[in-house]
Image (spheres, rainbow, N blue to C red):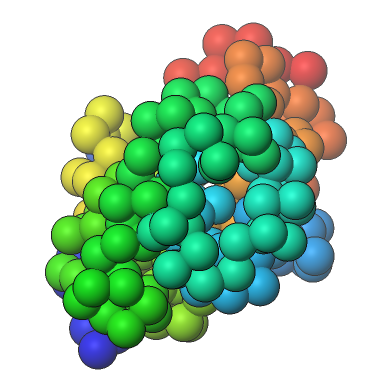
Length: 230
Ligand code: SF4
């Protein structure tokens, strides 16, 4: 396992829409600016991460981490979740949006883990996306961060915004954008790309107004679509 399902094509400098792109230089500079960038949901086990990732849809990381602190103390195995009721879980995750819906997914996914995978979180995209509440993006997150099996770049809202402004991709569709970024960025950077673009998106390249005057990659950035900045 570990095959690149979206295709690999590493290149250090490419030209798209006449905008010169230097992803390796940009990522190297971002890495020195955010040396502690890391995955942002708290977890100790692959099951923790599966649960946190299901909860994280359309929710801030801090809210998820706050909710899972107590949840993970009480629920440690897939069978614990499988035997829970929606109300049992909502007691802990009530502040997460769509809590009941997500609790239903967590319980159903855990039942499938118990029935089909001996209670373990599987290690392939194909098996992961069979689980309720788990799409391709979540599957890639789990493989990459729980098992270090890196099958692509995770595209979140920060990755979309920053990669737009850098001119790396303008695809509206997240899967197609992920494919373009996979082609543009060498595989050894895939895991960190989301962490670094997210850290940068939160600190400097914010929506709606980026702080370009103090941006460590300002000289490399074409600022695509930026009409106003600090
Ligand atoms: S120069 Fe501005 S738009 Fe470009 S990455 Fe930096 S903050 Fe974002």
